[in-house]
Length: 436
Image 1 (cartoon, rainbow, N blue to C red):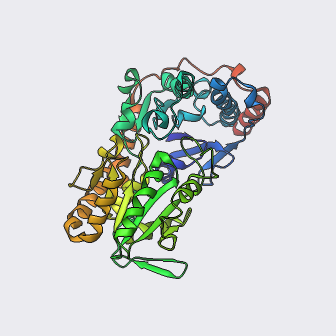
Image 2 (cartoon, rainbow, N blue to C red):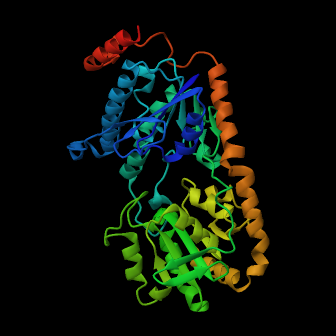
């Protein structure tokens, strides 16, 4: 029997499919720890916690994020100490270190093998990459680097790191890279498939596969995902292609970077900027949609545009490729790892609005020229990123290696009683009495 603990404030997040697979094997015990928003999972116990951010504004600006991370670490400490008091000792802990949740793990579970999910290491922000936005001073740059504090603490105590892409691994300090393996979360390529009969309905307008449909998907519509560039480019496309429709999926919040200072959202800001140029009856903002609707949108796409700063690669790009989309992507490093120009997609300079528009227009005018790229895109998704056949075996191999390996960095015998809060010690005693 192998006992797994997954820790992520937004559980299951990237760990969902892996947790479900492990839990389906009766030889495993799988538990999770997450914030109060963590979702329920079948046959998996999820321990939830809450934190308060009251008074954080009084902390030095450099330390505010770490202050919240420490508060989160404290609540995770209580959660995992409760698990320990109930008799649960994980063999393997998988944790996202970016929110402070990894900080207490080694203290409570010194013998566990800890795997850190190495999603991103902060080295720059949009003000250093995108000339459109004001540059930050040295204090701002220091503030960005301090965001890595919890992740660095976690890496010093981890047995192994896992990064979804080579580029994401490359942004971590060199001293840690030898312990980080590249294994993607994986996508379900047998579910995300091309469908020539797909259609979507938008307020009575039916759009089917084969129509001139330009698609764009992001968790939130913001500059990190090139939303401002995309919006400016479609002005030219819609003028040149009067039958084209644009379907945009994404929320109005901010996942990365900063909110606009002069508008309630980046969507509102771009609509204000382009109000006299966009035919809004052909630009459809759908917000966040159910997963099946999202898949149908990919399946009807004539051109899927994916733009991003050098940042975490979106699942949506790989799912678009799995659905057989013709992808026009930005020539930034994360995308270049997946798309080779004119081999399985098309690459354009991120900030070249004219190039993006011209390439989109050509794809709409001559779809037959690019049909082979759709096939190659799906082949890439299936061959490199399929969860069941490709990514899952890599994860399981890492777990097997860890179980067969020797002592963990923090292993030095049983955890001392003084790290378990007094109110939990009594629970542990009760548990022991019941099992005699």
